Length: 507
Image 1: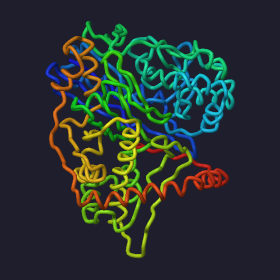
Image 2: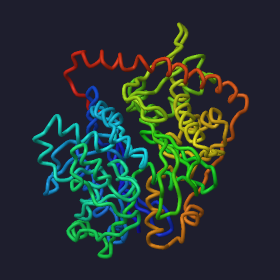
Image 3: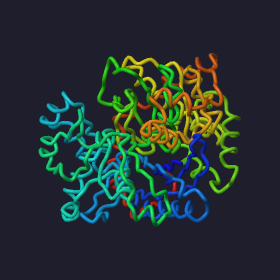
Image 4: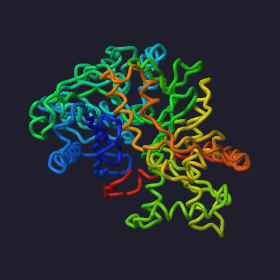
């Protein structure tokens, strides 16, 4: 059997699959996030506490623990923390959407030496990546910085729990000045980062022994192996792709990731579009992730509905159904945590546009639902700008549970939307990696053909697409007109006196 630990931005879950790829166990717990102005943090100690609750539940409340022979970890990327020699956290986790390193990111992007290296290696300097965040700690908390022996992402931290080893995969390492099979040591040195504080990079699919004490404590199979996978956005593509050429995978959990699994590099490249080689699987991934997807709906639910109502999602969808296409002119720009793709602006903020005297919760709800499709189309257009065709869209993740949102995405993008049977696409992708590593499938195409099932296909409405085309153009123009104002607004907010952190269960 196969155990996947999936740590996302808002929850941690354990999922067990049997040898026939059937999901037979699932348990999740919410993860708390601290929000304060530009700060977005989590506590790594809570991660371990919740992980151990999952493992204890499997041991005591199922008969599955001693049958688990393969396990892996997949987590959100760009969530950075520092640990000391003993493995104890010395910093909180700076989450991917934490913006305190934004100015440092801009410094790096304008640095002459960085640009010289970047021309050849295409290395990210985004504020979400490791280097700006490590430098931020060095400048603001030098005594803490000195105590850090290793800088890790979430995946590396949980992998260490199971194996006692510190390592990462090439795609996660790409957040740390890693390109073309090695860290750019001269570049790290240029910015004062010791390359010895970064994890060893190993191949996806590599095996490690699970720590004997972990096996004993949780009664895992004595033959249990840890399999190296990668971060959740990548796994989610592998767990939702139909394997068809030019099929884009829209994975909308807290954030939305849109990527195409391709056999060749795109003709045109950009600094925002990610082109990621899956060398072990002989494929490329082309696409990007934004700052919020399903998180848009979570925010709206918390702000305007009774989130404790067990039927709250049904009521939201029913309310959006009452609205007309285009929400009677109301637009929602959903940049609640800034944005990183298809444009980069950490200061971007959300807003409603087009509100009139007769606007009600119906129009607001419809506009919020439509905004999730607009950000998907934005990412699809980014992929198409690289010369990569997109002829269909496969949806998974929490947003895929909304039939109305799936239909709106089909209408906005004017392509068929495939809804997969199992929405746990991230864990399915991690399962695929484990099974290929174990040589149960000879290649990725064989695995996808056997594991991924499409439940329904939603075709676009030509009539609605014509309407949405004009609305999407307006959506883009409104955002572009606000670009120069976002920074002014952000500066004003910083001057306001705010003294209280906000703790939320869902980003």
